[in-house]
Image 1 (cartoon, helix red, strand yellow):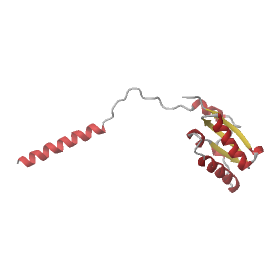
Image 2: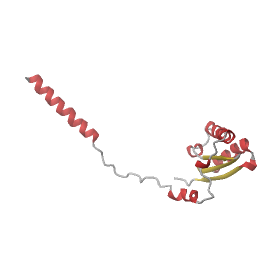
Image 3: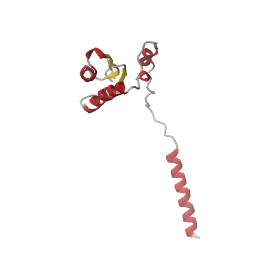
Image 4: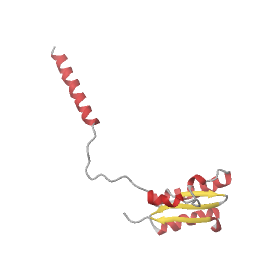
Length: 131
């Protein structure tokens, strides 16, 4: 009978421990959820170029792919720089999004110009404020 009682106590202990792990722990100093509403308001105008306007023809997709590949291979760029939007429509490239520095911005624009040509690149990159 002693073995059965030990097993019962062990089971209850495991159940209690698991329930403690599953309960949420309140944390003080939590950061508020990011809010990009102000940043995205510019995309609301009817003339704004947005990512969903990327053309699906092979030439435009290839242009975007080449620019993205060049950007991703450059480890000197910030994470922001690696995550910019590249939108190609009929050979015209629009670069959008925040970057960390003026050097990141110039570097990304140069990569796009090397692929698409200077007359085909519109720079809408913004330098993000320091955090």
